[in-house]
Image 1 (cartoon, rainbow, N blue to C red):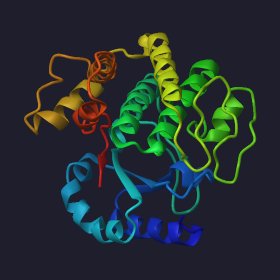
Image 2 (image 1 turned 90 degrees about the vertical axis):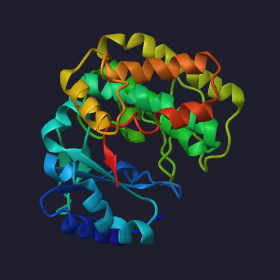
Image 3 (image 1 turned 180 degrees about the vertical axis):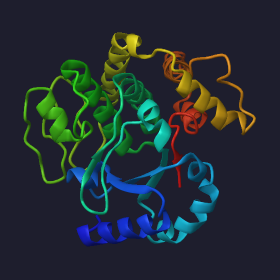
Amino acid sequence: MFSAKTITQIHHSLQQIFSHSTVLLGGSYLYNEATEDSDVDFYVICNLADYFSFRQYKKLVQPIKEKYPNISMMLVPKILQKYLYYIYGQDIREQIVELPTNKNVIVKNCLKLAYYNYCSYLALKDEKYLSKAVKQIKALTAILKTNTLNGPIFSWKHISLSLGRETEIEGNGVPNQIPDLTPRPSPRGEGETTNDSKVLLQTIKHHHAQSNQYLKFSLINYLFYNLRFILKSNFEFIFSNPDKKIINGMLAELENGKNPSEIYEKYKKTVMLGIFL
């Protein structure tokens, strides 16, 4: 794990590189829920020019990535953030920055990531993806129950409090008991049973069925997806609702018995719109 001093040094180095942007620390290190396997998540809130100049910045951050392979940096265009992402983080002055969003965006991203992390777990046999899928679907449960979009909604503690039961938090930040869901992530990421992963998939499918009203067509989402992928000669989203196509596509392929590794490879470049450096 990284010390607070190291996190601060990395944060300041990134802010110097992205001098015209705001760099935020997010995720488990911000929530004090990091484990040995946790990545350090940074969001770079930038203008569109910097967003589409990501190759230039990729070279600039390469030395940091080589020294700290567990650093994750996502470029987020500020002008479109509200319509595409949920962002909650801390800037270099240690001030919390919570950018506006909407329920449709969060629900769609929860479903996309729950299915994708489930497929990643089956494909890569890595328990951290099972834990990520559980967190996404538990956060979605809390959002649908409370209709609250404020605060660190992907923190285990926040999820537990939102569901009305403050569970005991162990030193690694994972609740001993996550109500109303099996499987639960184990303290060190040891394997869950096949039956547990099947129960998780059924839970994701249940929430999917209950959330169709939030999968509405978004013009900004449509335009941004197509702008991203048409430039790569990928035209699959021209006649579709991109998020709905991805979510329903992963479900259909899982139900049809497609190899999870093939699903993982197919969707890994389209699940998230953010550019990762």
